[in-house]
Image (cartoon, rainbow, N blue to C red):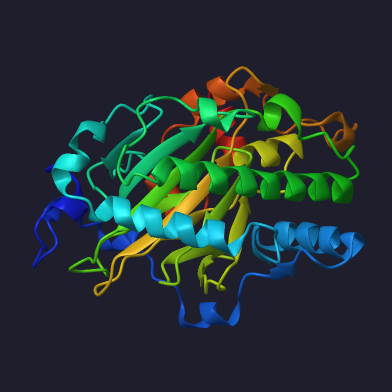
Length: 342
């Protein structure tokens, strides 16, 4: 637990291991605030909603959804219990600490993306929920706060339902059969990352998360009202202004592969701040490990051959396990190029 940022004394200065070279920290331009994520009201007509989702996905790759059906109580309880977890004494969490990336449930700091020499300013609680029987989720979950399991399971069931609704709307908009993204491609454990970003002594010199694309199918984020998320857009970064009660939604690499690049998994990063801790909850809809994923035949023809290899999700994760910060921080991450290098 001594490696966890939130368990350590408040830092007066930023430890050297967290300092990124200036050329790896391009700042968002002043004009970036002129572009914002689309906000989609899911209570509108189905045709209008699916067009809005597809348009937002093609233009930016990120959007926010409101009137989404996940209860406000479930969202508030989830945010509250996660904050309670990180406020627990270190000894109540010490047994959960692990740097083993294969462990379903653990807490860790910085150790998801290989940035080379630099660490990034984030602690994370990782939880995996089995589906369809959430109650059979792997053992080893935290036993404190006492209500954590009940709150997480209720939140996860509702959030996954929202994710599947969005995937069905996407399929309809793309001309796929509505259930194309059901089954093994969305049937893996639902993984939750509770990201905790403590106050940072020098937000200009480090990152909460480095630029990366999500490897899964679909991500739904409860973003916190404290700004920090930034999305790559036309060579710059969009600063995301969270909407109360909304989810931020983005596409994972598997949607890019299935659509043969019609939809893109877009780079995003997290900035830190000096004054206040920030906690977010990311829900990842995942394929099963053995699910074979490649471009759908609907997107292929003589003029548009497969641009991505067909791989099992397990193989994909092993291959695409490193964020290449040299290129990624310059906004040139390209999944096609990564696969060509194999």
